[in-house]
Image (cartoon, rainbow, N blue to C red; front, side, top):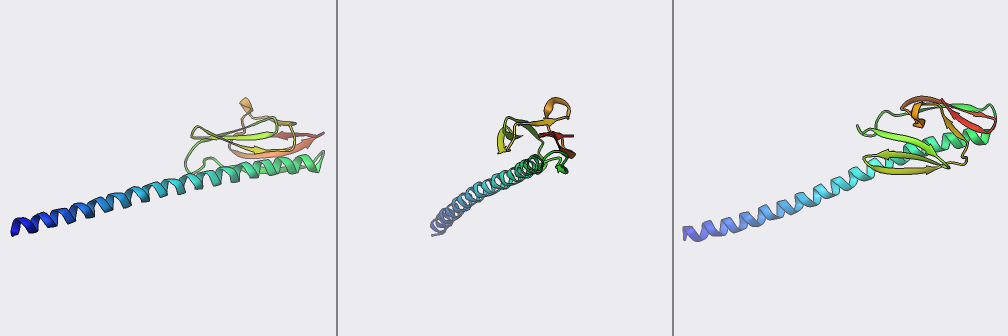
Length: 132
């Protein structure tokens, strides 16, 4: 009788542990999805902010200038920003995200043509958006 009770308890305990493992796996998967979505949302926010500022400077015409601050990291992760053709690109963890701008006439004065983190001035100089 005791052996049968112990066996029943062991079976119930194993079912309980298996259910907990399944719940833990589902929770971990959902947490990763939320984390990825949050990072993508922040990345798109940064791209939109930069693209919008460039577009405003371009549309306002010669002499217009404004400032923009590019954050140091996205959730403790390093990233790179560059501009090519009509796009602003952001690379984070091997994934490249893109935002569209209205002009191809953008010059970045930072070394290497990459948009460095920190404070920048965007200025329209005869139809060319210069980022310093």
